[in-house]
Length: 298
Image (cartoon, rainbow, N blue to C red; front, top):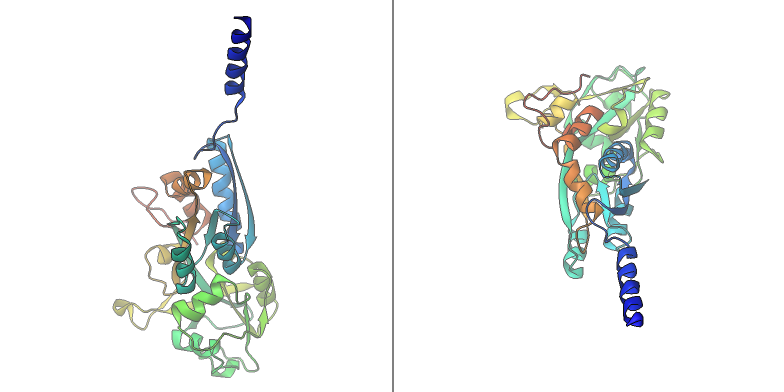
């Protein structure tokens, strides 16, 4: 009888000491994030962990392509990137039978930046295309620049979402874009542009939401028939209303075999508090965080 009691106690103690199963509000998550969106996602993660103090979210910045490859290789279960999967990547998902959730969380944009010592203020879409395909290589062929000499095109590397959005998303260029110079990060590109009037950079709107000194954004020709001929500034409100032509969505991709912290975190980002963080950060939320949206002033 005594032996039976001891066995029962041992079973009970073992059951009580068994670690808790991970859930949407308990456990750890490691995610890869497109480099320019790390500050935003850090704010989201900090708020989520403050609400659900049994969660731990760690992240690292990388290129969009590398984040997607890691997801498809099952190295990570959650990524935040600035483009949709391309045809090749979707085929891998289909063939592998991966359970992949796609969540639109915000709207971003590509912006063209020049030094404050460059007088150019606006640019046509046709001119951007010609710069990208090297039809235009000098400033004298850019209307409104009042400059001469070589035009330096500064971009991130070919694995970046910026590059792929330009190549296939907005301009469908037949040849690979070959910039004059590549930057390791968007912040590095911004710093280079500020000190080089002959340079033109293309970065995400998130890289310039804090209005860095020494550069300004170019207004881009509208593609809306109701505002034909106008040039639209890259502002939070214009991106939210999809008036600025080079706008796109930011995505969270979640690959979990059962509901975990990634699912809980992605759900939080789409709630009003999560969308409010995006709005306060300076990007355009995917959904309206309040009855009357008060976008951050420029």
